[in-house]
Amino acid sequence: QITTSDELVVLSNTGGRTTYQNAGRTLRRGFELGVESQLADDWTTTLAYTQLQATYDRDFTSPKGLIDKGNDLPGVPQTTLFAEVNWKPADWVSTAIEGMYRSKVYVEDTNTQKAAPAYSVFNWRAKFEQKVDHWTFHQTLRLDNLLDRQYV
Image 1 (cartoon, rainbow, N blue to C red):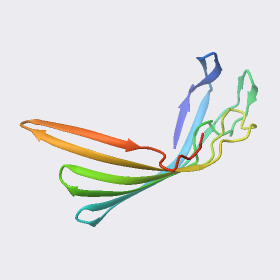
Image 2 (image 1 turned 45 degrees about the vertical axis):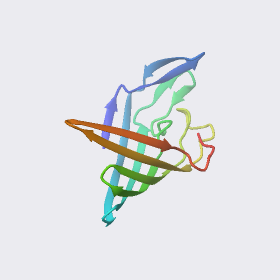
Image 3 (image 1 turned 30 degrees about the horizontal axis):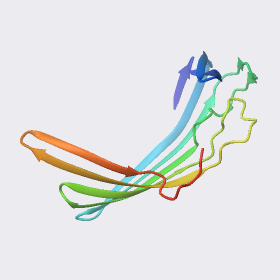
């Protein structure tokens, strides 16, 4: 559990300019679980799960009116799930497929507008490494959102 005092939240966002205000207290309660597994010499998996309840812990006033204690913080999913299968056929190269799920998120402080829906995406990456004397060079290629999913 984390309680934060005077957290900064968006007051207004107009014409590309954002101003902030203090929101009083916020509260975050949750847990994370993670597992890594070696399937074979060159295959590994990772699974990570987060459950988080992030809320305002006190009422406060914004230009939209009174923001009630207990409202969810906007932009923070309650559930996040990450899974990865990684293949490393040689010391200098690896490739992985990643899957990520995020639950719906509220988009504003009052929690009265329609929430952005939950979504899942799949990504691919490849990593390369070269060693020259005392130097090590790393490169990463990524393709995010392989299925071209529309999400917020």
